[in-house]
Structure formats: C-alpha cells, structure tokens
Amino acid sequence: MRRIALSPMQRSHIHQQATERLQLMACLDFSGLTLIEPVLHELHRLIGFDTGVYFHPDASGNLDAYIEPSVAREWMYRYFDPQMMALEPEVVRYSSHDFAAAVRHERGVLVMEQLISVSRDEFIRSDFYNAVARPSELQDFLSLVLRTPQGAGVGSLKLCRKPGAPRFAPEDLAMLTRLEPWQARILQPGEMD
Image 1 (cartoon, rainbow, N blue to C red):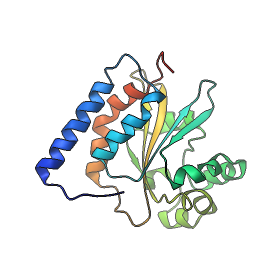
Image 2 (image 1 turned 180 degrees about the vertical axis):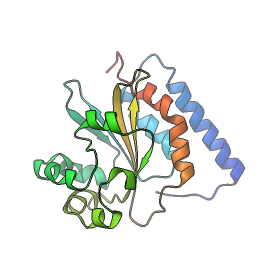
Image 3 (image 1 turned 30 degrees about the horizontal axis):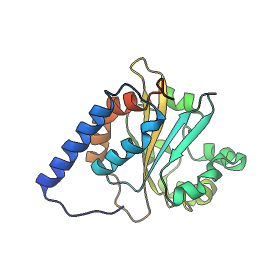
C-alpha cells in the first residue's frame, strides 16, 4: 500500500472524484462481477488497503472469489482447501463459505475483531491464520456484506492490509459505510453476467 502525501484539498478532490465515479457506475445499464475491478480501483483511492477480495455466490450458488493481483491471490486456493475450511470455524464467526449465515448476521462494515471469535492474538497464532492469511500477507480486515434493497445477499467485500500497515481508522469504516448502497447496486448480478 503506497501512501503519497497529499494536501487536504487534493485528498478531498480525489475522494470526491472517486465517489462520483462509483455513483455513476451504479447508474449503468449493466452491473455485476464485471465491475469489481473498477470498484476496487476507486475504493483504493478512498481507503488505503493492500488487497481487495470479493466473495460471491456463482451462478450455481457455490462460493466464488475475486482477488486482486497480489501475494494473497497466489495463496487463496488454500482458503478453499477442505482442511482449512474445517479450521476456519474455530476462529471466525461466520465463514465466507457460509454466505447465507454472513447475510443473516453481518450488518454494516465490520472490523477484524468483529469477524473473529477469538482474541486478535489467538487468531494470529491460529493454524488457520498461519496457513492462509499469513502467507497471503493479510493481517487487518474490513468486511462488508452487500445486499439488494430487498435484503438478498450480493457478495462480501473484504479490504485487507498487510502486517505493519496502520489499522483501519474510523473514517475508513465511515467511508465504506457511505458507499455501501452504490457498491451493492454496482455488483448486483445483472443481465450481462
């Protein structure tokens, strides 16, 4: 995650442009997974994070994932390994593998401590973390389950930071919260999917 020193006015202008582009994407005649890359591009301009991951049900209802090019993409196959799937419930409240449970229980932007069922220290020492997240260079997370206006689950967006990066700040959560309706509309499967 590269941070460039910007004046408050420059930062405000960049944030305004990125927000406007997300709002415009929500007005397009097509939507869905084809727009995940431009959505993540704009989110990078608004919230500093290293890797974006988007979990979503595929056409058959099975879990699928889009992962930005990164070390995480190289290691994420482990997340789908049955052994790792068995370890995850020991440390995580609602697995992305059980998307229906995440849709039922996760509301709003959640920070890592709200996603895990053990202390942060226990999580970082867990077999699950050491087999999946550590090699993927992921240590801090924001999560947002996106829903249609009717409440149906669209997907689950994860913004991740590497070890040593600053923790997500309240303004990061506030920004992601403000953008939730547009993101849900943009990524809702449409006719082009």
